[in-house]
Length: 397
Image 1: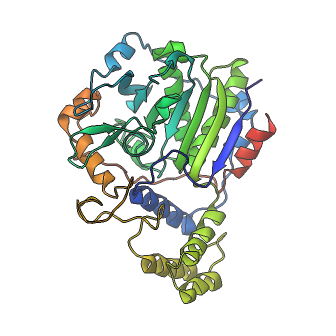
Image 2 (image 1 turned 30 degrees about the vertical axis):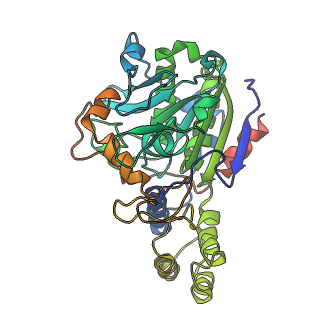
């Protein structure tokens, strides 16, 4: 199978992303890594064998999509500013009709020659955090939610200035994505989410057929260090099995990504120490107590003490203020040009507004309780490292 160049971009900082308070994503990831310490062992990585699709693949559900694109078109979002010069869509795409599983998306076309621009799928991580809340509303989407939680302003650094951007809430149970089978919320894992994302893409492309042959990129952050390369590998497997191009994958990009267990766990405490957030003695204890490839009780005690000593910080931007109550940085007297540590609060208020949900064609199942930015999932399957998958993607061109 011939692809355009698979461009792997590992970035240590988010280019063109606003560094907002993402403590919820960080907490989700820390919870996952802590759960893996005592209960997980090395697991086979199904993405490393491009030939496995020949023997292990199952039919993918593709349902009728007639009329759904027009139904998903957003007339206007409540509180959006004037002069919006691009089309936006939102809605659910069924990925498993038997289990009633459907994923929610928000799509913004470029205002500048959208027909010639590439298609980019953006994935936030956690696992368990919303790409609508973080990616679309706080980072690279076209709008920011103002401090009143009701009105929007344009983000002049939005990625839809140069691409058509598709934000996906995944897996089922995250944001407005849902499943009618309760076990789907508790028995998630990398393989299922990759398969659901692939099924979503095939159905979405039927709904938006003029994007079928478009240059396609996958990008993301945090636990998308797993999501992105795994989905890319699955696309390649399925293209090979189909002896054709089901999805025209051209490149992947990940930033601030969770890629390798051992490196991530060890580097966390080196980072805290090198930025004077924990003492020499506390850091020395983690070095003395921990073999990060097999964390035991003594290491868990040492790292828990280090996390507590670091205190209430935004681990993705340790020099930024954190949100206290509902006060924004400007209200609390902190002079910040672009960072508002309470953005999560504004986004949550906005996306819980019934009129906003109506405009987005969201919450069709009537969520039991308020919509939230992140949902805790019991992640039952995840390789310790996705570096081998990324090396494979580069090696095959």
